Length: 126
Image 1 (spheres, rainbow, N blue to C red):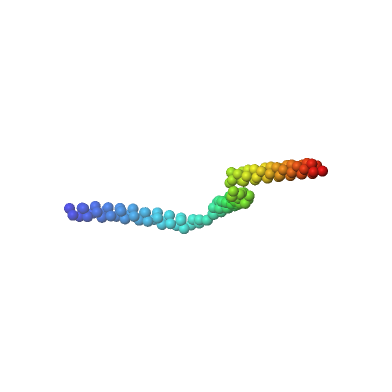
Image 2 (tube, rainbow, N blue to C red):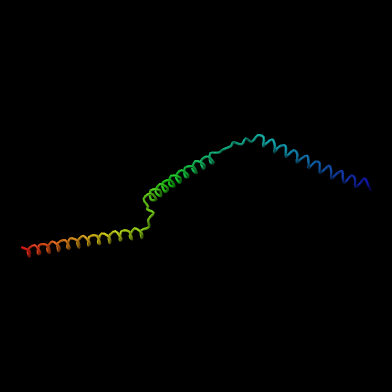
């Protein structure tokens, strides 16, 4: 009775060993195949993508430089004084010119009037 179970166990073990040996043979064949395979590293696609990326970045950088230069030009032309304040200054200057012109005109009229009065007084004295 004990031998029968031992025979069954031995038979199972021998089947397992055969399966294991077959697996090892397959693994050896596969490793031989992998040793014969030569892998060539091809980086041409990556290099192309890098060159394309660098080209587009140079274009973007160029456009960015143009925009920055335009902004610098616009900032150099801009004034710090608000437009409303400028209009107020121009209005004050214009009103001042009108007042000065009126005063000059009025002064010349007064001078003419005094001259006319002086002429009349001289005529009366003669």
